[in-house]
Length: 88
Image (cartoon, rainbow, N blue to C red; front, side):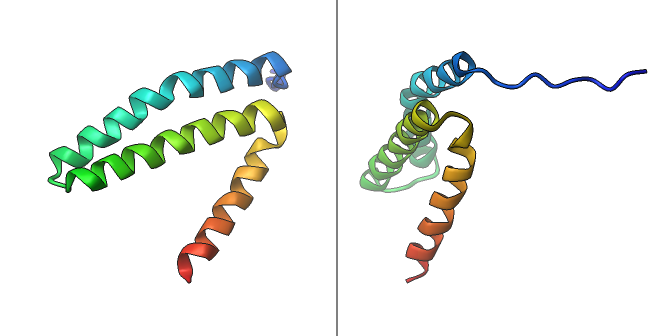
């Protein structure tokens, strides 16, 4: 039995992934708003959470679109920087 060969992602695959991420940004923001509201959060916090969710989705789509295969490493560094900032 031969090992399965994994296909490398092509630029078209990254474009498709960025497009799907853009399409899911609005429903994701709406869902986060609804879930926060159901849990009893203040409406301002619901809007803040929805906004952060939307911006994160749009940022991820832009990062995937611009950087392609290097986007995962960039996202990891962004997460590290955000954790360092949040600690202060």
